[in-house]
Image (cartoon, rainbow, N blue to C red; front, side, top):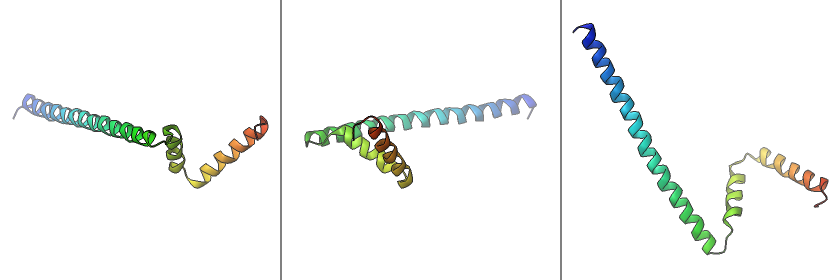
Length: 87
């Protein structure tokens, strides 16, 4: 095999690999769109039952936090509310 053939076959491997990454990303992007649509439908169902989607999203955000982070945020919120005379 000549150097030119070696370079050509390496180039083909890189080309195939790149194409594979791009196609996989596109599949994941489609899955992500499907999941986003499912989440939208879920929130619409919750809203139809009288729940506030904005508050549900806030609860989800809080549930992702570590306990210490959540407590710190709550303490700061309380402090700020006091500072502006809302408590």
